[in-house]
Image 1 (tube, rainbow over the protein chains, first blue to last red):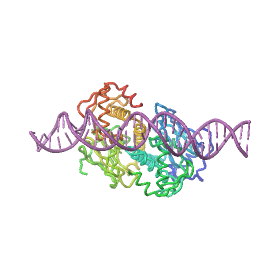
Image 2: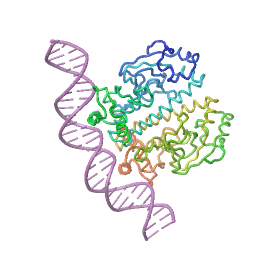
Image 3: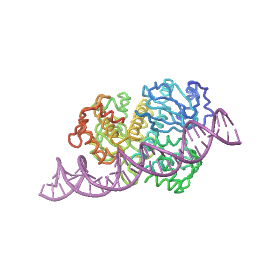
Image 4: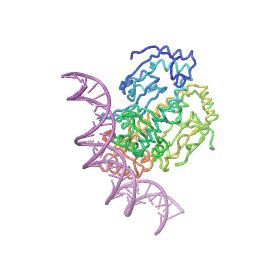
Length: 232
Length: 232
DNA sequence: CGTTGGTTTGATGGAGATCAAGCCTCGTGG
DNA sequence: CCACGAGGCTTGATCTCCATCAAACCAACG
C-alpha cells in the first residue's frame, strides 16, 4: 500500500470526483491522509473478505468489480471509470474483488479518516450519496441489459456503453475507442462465453456496423443500427 | 396523491428507516411535509419519465422497481421491502416504474422539502447513503445470481432471498412464507419464462426441497440443499 | 355454469454452451 | 534473423438447456 502524497491542484478529476464538493481548505484535510497509488493491469486493489479499511477515488484507468463463484469463474458486476469512488463505508469487510483492467492511478484513503472528514463536512457525504445513486442506476441498467436479451443485444449494448464511456462529451458515443476488457472479461460481464462474444463481434463486423482494429480497437460505423440491435 | 398525516410514534419501521437517524424534533420537520399513502396490489407509485418530485419510505408491503423494454415486456430490477427508501434525489425524472406487489403503506414526501431537511440534518443524508449502498449491494447480488447460472440455480437463489426477506431474524431463512410475486413476476426478475419457473418449482418439490401451499405459499424443507443448488 | 386469470404440463425447436482445432501476435532464446 | 512457445482470439461441429407453442388444469367469481 505504498504511495506518494497527493497533488489535488493538478488532479484531472478534481471537479468530477466526490472531493469536488469540498472547498480548498476542506480538501486539504483529505490531502493529509490520502496517498497516490498506481496499479498495473491485473493488480488487485481490494479483495473480497478483506477488512474494508480503505476507500479510494479513481483518477485514471479503469477497474472491475468482480465476484468469483464457487466454481472459481469470474463474474464482473461493474466497471469503475475515472472519478469513481470505491470502498464500502458501512460493511466491515469488502464484498467483492476490485481489480485493475488497465494501468490505473488512484487516491487511497484510510476509511476511518475519510469517514471522519465526511462527518465534519456533510457536503462530502452528499456527493457520495449522489455517486452511490448513480452507481445504483448503472447497476440496474446493466441488469436490464442482461435479463432476457439475446447475445447480440448484450454485445451491442455493451459496445454502446463502452463508446459512451470513452467519449468525453457525456451523451455522444466515441467513434473509435479501445476496449479496456479482454474477450474473457467481456464474456464474464455479459453472462456469455468467450466464443459467443467473438462470434457476435465478427457478425457485427460482417454487417458493417463496426470494424475492428486488432483485438482491442473498435470503430463504430453505424451507431444507430447498433442501438437498434441493443434494444431488440 | 391523497393521504393522511403521519404518525411516526407508532410507525413499525421507526427505527430501521432512514428517518431513524433523526431525533424526535428533527423528525417533526419531516412529519409536517410527509403524507401517509396506501397502495393496492398493482398500483403504480412512480412511473418512468415522470418528474421525480416525490420520494417515499415503505412502511409495509412490498414494491417492485421495473423496467419495460421496447417490446413492452417487464423486467423487475429490484424489490423494495419495508423501511426501504424510494425516489431519485438527483435525476430530474424517474428512471423506472415503481409498482406495488402487495397492498402497501408508505410515507410520501415532496422531494424539495425532503432534500431541504437532509441539508439541514446531515445525519439523514448519511442514513440515505447507507441505504443506497445496501441497495447497490443487493443489486449486485442479484446480478451475480443471474449471470451465467442455470434456471435451477436462479430459482433456488431467489427462494432463499425471499425466505431471508420474510424472516425477521436477519440471517436465518423463514421456514414458511408466501411469495409476494406471481410466476410471471418471478420470471421477469430472473430472466426466465413463466413455464421454466413453474417447472423448476415442481422439480424442487419432487426432490423434497420445498413443498407448495397453493400458488404463493412455500415451505422450506431442506434449506441447505437449496443453498447448494443456488451456488451450483 | 361458463368465464377468466393464473398455473402446470407436454412437445418441439433454436440460441448459445461446450468441445476441439486452427490462427495470430508477441516475446524469448537459439 | 528465425524458430519456438504461450496467450489470446477466431472458427467450426455438436449437444443441451431453455424459450416457444399449445393445451389442460384449477380456483374464484359473476
